[in-house]
Length: 166
Image (cartoon, rainbow, N blue to C red):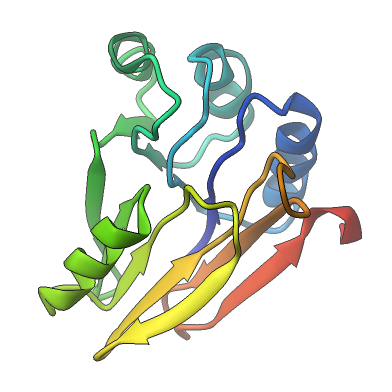
C-alpha cells in the first residue's frame, strides 16, 4: 500500500490543497497525519471530502480535541486515534504520534516496524534497534520548507517530498 504521511499542516490551505491534488494523482491509498491539523474545519472542508481513502490522524499540541472528535465521526473514511495511533498494514506494524520522545518510547517497545511522528517541523529519519522512526516535516512550511513523506508498505521504501517541487 502506498501511504502519505503528513504533519503540522497548521491550517495552510494552499499547501494542503496542493498536497491533496498530488496525492490523488499519484495513487496514494491512505493518509496518516501526525498532528497539528489545527482547525477542525480542515477535516470537514478539505481532507475528508477531497480524499476518499482512509485518513488516520492524531491530536497535536494545537487542537480543539472535542471538536476534532465530533467532526471526525461525521466521515466514514476518517479515524481520530487520540494521542497516538497503531495500524498493521501488509504485515508491518506502524505507530504514529506527535512528539519525538513519544515516538522513541514506542520504538523501544520493539512492537513496531515503523513509527511516524511530527511536532518539531524537521524532516528526519533514524532507527532505534530495528524500528524506523520517520518525521515527514511540516506541510505548513513553518520554520522549514513544506514537506511530506510517502511510504510503500510492500517495499518498505520511504521518500521525502518537497512540496515546492511537485
